[in-house]
Length: 498
Image 1 (tube, rainbow, N blue to C red):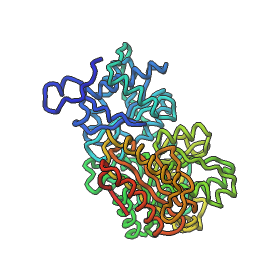
Image 2 (tube, one colour):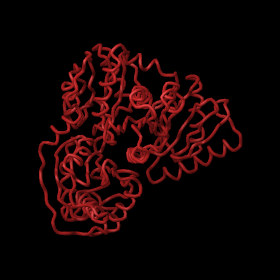
Image 3 (cartoon, rainbow, N blue to C red):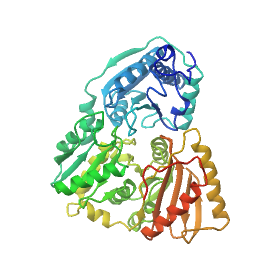
């Protein structure tokens, strides 16, 4: 295998012939590049050969399920990847266009030891990437990604005989059957289904119809130009649009799905956005009654309520705060035997009796409908208002280059830890501790907190604040965190702020 070249440019002889891969595309738990600026088709073939070589290195049977999201270039990218997998002697089972959780499901349905999903997730058009995994329901974490990066960039891919390609039909229907089973709603529900014209448009409305839910469509026509907004239920643009749809239609709530369908966002009947970590507490409260003594995992961006909520404590619920990122969370849920994991970005990891442990926005939608069915006298806003009141920001992402962000974060963590050690206050409160499992989560004496970490997917830092006291304190904590961030000149503007 030829070592990829990092510097080949489009519209040259070399670009059509030689693999080009920018090393920064290998992230902590998946791979993402701008196409064709950061990877070309021979580069994607080199990645396929690398994944196949890695499969053999791990002793897997040479069979992989492959799918792609709904973007105009995703089939081309997938075909280039498949050529590399076949060069490595892998038998490819192509399940066609799908959302990422359907690809994860196909591993179980087809008994395939590996999966590779061609998707840019919620990233804007112009991005591509691959989510891959060997040990279902897990996906690659930092160790596997580091190993794959070395195989690909050092030209260590090994060809082998036996490669084949097969188009597999029927997975879509099997997946939908698996999601719904014979469940039907006993109460009437009217739900806004927001898909932002992304891949989930082919799944969401059908799913709700099968559940017996009245659908209020919101940008459900497949259109890979994303004419209204980029489908990302963590972005206020999408959440505000969902809120407007609820108010205009009188719906019971809105559910929104990201570009590859593994995340879900919620807006209640009053048009209030319920950030995914807070909705996770609502879901945990409901599940705690059915499964007392369970463990729930939450990522470090999430509300402190998983640990402090009196309702959860009634049922002997254990809370575990862990690293942000779908692979980190899947592994933690699996390792602890947790019933579920909740991530502020909208990834939910339902395991045990309610799921297979991978993140699936459609599975979450089913469980939300079941939750509402179990609480027939409650509106979504009632469930929100029943939570202890906290004030939290959306996820805010100041620019920081991929090549710089981890070094910048290390310095920020050092500065925040030093502030705590010096006895400094934040927003007039003593700093109780600084949790550094994933960036720095500065926790104050009253349980309020502020977090800064590096994004694993994009050239950004990530900032989240939660106050247990007031909006004013939330803003004051943000000002304190931001003041430290501004000591680093390599950090740019925020994508959204308060």
